[in-house]
Image (cartoon, rainbow, N blue to C red; front, side):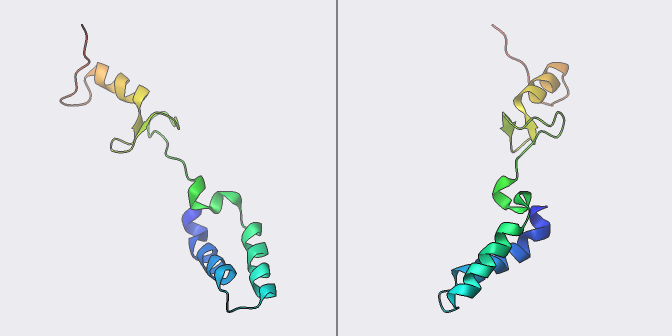
Length: 86
């Protein structure tokens, strides 16, 4: 959803920050920006695990959570990764 509204959101932000425009026009742009869906903002995008959908404990490089990573490593599905024990 963030990519869908990205261009519109950026255009409205530019209008609202432009000091050369009248104050009423900038205020109208801010109102239109507030009417957009909340999830259209890029800051609300959350990284989630590809396997479990878990939002926390996420490794960007592997695109999975720590729990899913440990489960796959224990099963031997990740090459070169071994579970340590002592």
